[in-house]
Image (cartoon, rainbow, N blue to C red):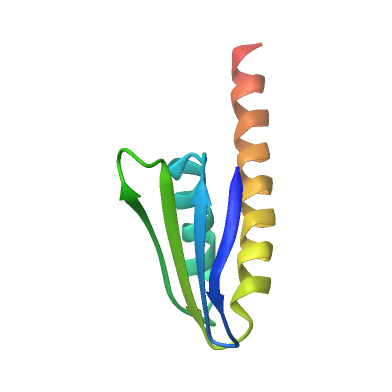
Length: 90
């Protein structure tokens, strides 16, 4: 996964993400939208042939720290799901 910051300031961050799974980014978007400081969080595929995904986050506070915290929360949620699935398989 290759992530580049297109632009970032105190209220908005735009990222270009290459070679990523959009499903994982949807989970991060979901976690971002749970936060009351997040005004907007969007994920789009720039073009199906380029394998590039754009993410935009508008926030009342630092959007880059919110993205990081939401990624950590998404990892924790997926870990819980994996444990649940593994417990049902055994």
